[in-house]
Length: 165
Image (cartoon, rainbow, N blue to C red; front, side, top):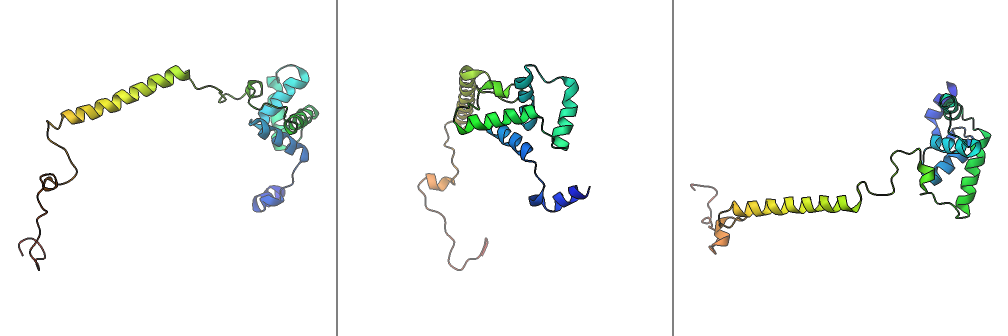
């Protein structure tokens, strides 16, 4: 508890774990969460998905105790190495298989975009056309009528302060 309060008061002096920093760096390179990186590392090391029974224990060990499994360190170092040698494609969908919000294409594609744009243009154009018909041939303007009729602006006699002066 004492360490927690000290970290809250001085976050710049938080004790860091270099192994956990490697995981965070690799997750940032791939633009995924740290736990997603652990899932990828497990799949890479063992050749199977992370069992549901291990999820809670792994989460607690890593996130709360900052204990990094050896297979996760290996995977994070490999990601960092590939990134530094420009061999890594961080947009590869294989890295984002646990990321539900990741999508490389627009939902519905180009056709859906074109339909939505056409509906918007028809709506705005129709609104402008209906507003033009509503004026009954009269000109609608934000200016007072004497500006359009060519008349001059009525002026007050000198010394007059308000109406009825």
